[in-house]
Image 1 (cartoon, rainbow, N blue to C red):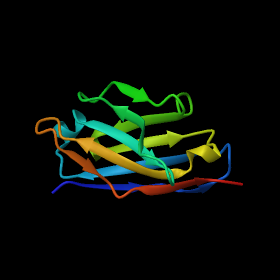
Image 2: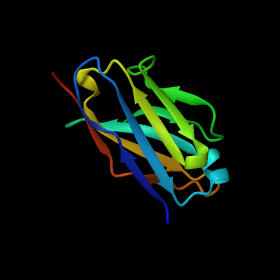
Image 3: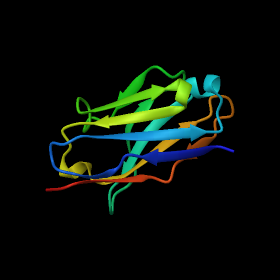
Image 4: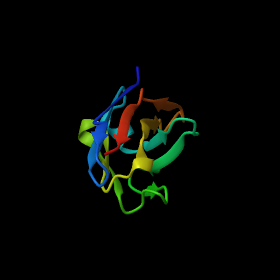
Length: 121
C-alpha cells in the first residue's frame, strides 16, 4: 500500500525558510529512485499549482517561475523521501503543500494529505 506523509509546514515570517519533507511508503528504493515526484500547493480560492518536480527517471527538475531561485527540491532515495527547501518566503507562498509521486511502471499517481504553510508577520 502506497502512503505519502508530508511534514515540516508551519507559520513563518516573510523572508524566512522552511523545509518540507515527504516520506513515501510502499515503493522499494529502486522504484522510488526512478519515480517522478512533485510538490504542489493550493491557496484558498485558487487551483492547485505545480511548485517543483523531479521528472520520471529521478534526476531532472522543474520549478514554477514564481519559486525559481528560492525553492529547491531534493530527494534521498535510500530514505524514500523528497524535500522542498523554501527560502525567502513571501506571503503569497501561503498554501497547503502536497506531495505527489507517480509510479514509474504503472503510471498511477499518489498524493499525500498536505501540510499547511503560512507566511505572515
